[in-house]
Length: 159
Length: 426
Image (cartoon, rainbow over all chains, first blue to last red; front, side, top):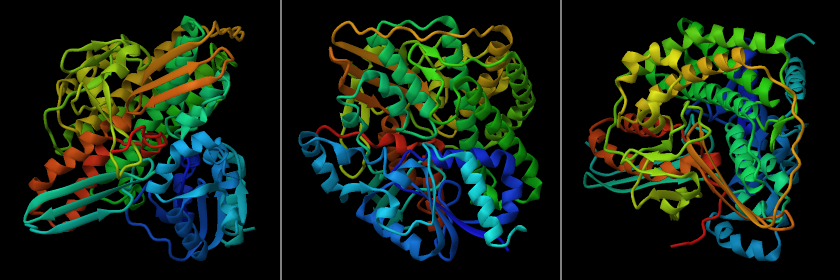
């Protein structure tokens, strides 16, 4: 048995994905035994969001399409973990929320053209978030501790 | 042979960031190709306005997770030009090391994890059988060497904390440097296997291309003039005068032309234009591989990346072995009135341009960032257009794969490419 994991990125710079991939340097063979990556577009083209144990979600939500996808991920995941500052707080991906009127007018046509939401939002404004790993990028030590916690909770390693 | 075919690849895989590809074939002819960079914009061009110049380098580092060191370094260069700060030789060496660390890590990620599955006909490294375990170990060892080099010099490999305007706030200890040299040396032997894999690959898609890169005198990615395969040499501050911003209505990223022509930046451009400047010890062992260049084959971009890893390892070892690193004091930041500063460096994916203008109150009034993947966007899309007629006799899933493969060869970074407002809409 393995932990069914989905790894998702929304509006952000994908720095937490890079940190995660760097953490693999020392742990790939151990994690390969414990984790089944059902969705990880950075690494594979054959992806599925069905029946996830944990969804790690990076980035803030800035379009209606992203919101729909996030809701689908939530419905399909036992746990949803926000990783990195944009997912946890919206910032800095949400900087357009704070633009003055003139600058907002300047970018309005882009927002309309690409079906963007009026405000860029952190995940918890839209769905239930079970855990937060903050930092820009996410804090490595906190991530490893949380992953270990889930390995135990899902009985992949002994508590 | 497909007479009518619609291809819609949602979210190309094994790239940084998000892009879709739409293709329409009618009566055996390519009717439409759209490469859509679908990363949602974060409007950095606007967000930097009214901010104090000293906060900008760390801020724009957040444009991209994987090449944050490139954005940070390029932006520091632009700010320093506004302040008339000339970095010391030691600072330049530290910046080279920081950038070399990023190149090793970033190229290794792309080559081993995004490209090798194509060569071994697998979907991902997770599908490799145990016969490839050794190769996977080498991949992680190489990424780790790059990661640790950037960490040692710049504090972190992503959004580094020690690299500042005019100085580094901490220097590595002699013990740490010794350990780092050992790690780099241990990694070196594996690079040749990687180089051979891409050298022996029979993937090919070639067409006449204009290449552009900096001609750094030691292939260090940080300075020089902008040179083109058509023989032009342009100063960093004049680069923008040759560029034409092309609005692509369905893409969140702007495209660019250079003197009205489509062009390419990146490792292939650097190798084609500047291979003579590679580190001497690397060059000695690369003779047969370097004969490949200049090349128009887009898949040689990946061979060029592998060769660059060796250069970065060797030059880093030499720089660490032969330099004493002394603590630095922060320079006094003095702005003499309104200023304009331009920084150009070679990021992993090609020439990166940062232009800042600062007012008397030290606030940014204007910013312009020209991103490598955005510059390659038009050529990538045209490659798809020209490749399609050659592969229409293949099965649909093979066509999908060929299209993704050619885009992937560029090592595009969609996160970087978007996030900037298109000024005009057609």
